[in-house]
Length: 254
Image (cartoon, rainbow, N blue to C red):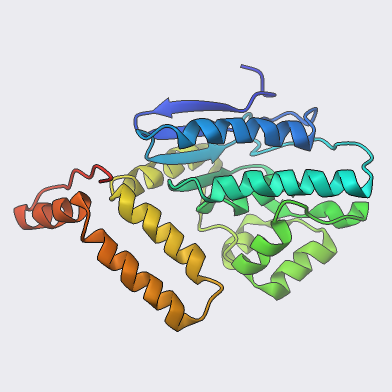
């Protein structure tokens, strides 16, 4: 299939979301394809987790949209932000497997995933500053929340790419793997995660996001209520029963 296509491949309860590898795509065309695939994934209750990766050894390559007026730029940014918010709120664990040079919109998309792993030869950055512009789809905000304001400013202001070991050090990615085994290891990691309760995974992700920017006491109240909610689920009972029976749990998401 053409590397211009954004496609889903199902492997059991895991969905592979393979991003286009063609720079001939505009950012709007790319985002429209991603949005359609996210709508499809959201409707698949049997999909427990999503692995986002590239094609042809590159995570994501996207072209430009040509000259834009300020109103056109604002509309494009607003559309792209809504797509990545949809990715962030998918309700399933989403792991990005990063390869090649992860820049611009590709890095912004990776930042909207649950977390990312990368090949040891990958490089990361926002080179937009060299073109007199900035990331437009939540990149400045998600980057600062993940790596801290100082590192985010360095990356945004310099436009330079950082190597994989530096990305790991600043917590931009969670783990590094050799290029030959990146997808295999990312899949194994996501498969382990997807043996957990879908309800607990979804609520846990919501708690992390909702509590990140509020005061600790209020966030802990949210955690208290989420904890209590788990005890109304069949998954919690199955988890306790399987522990007592010394067997692997069979979670249903109920």
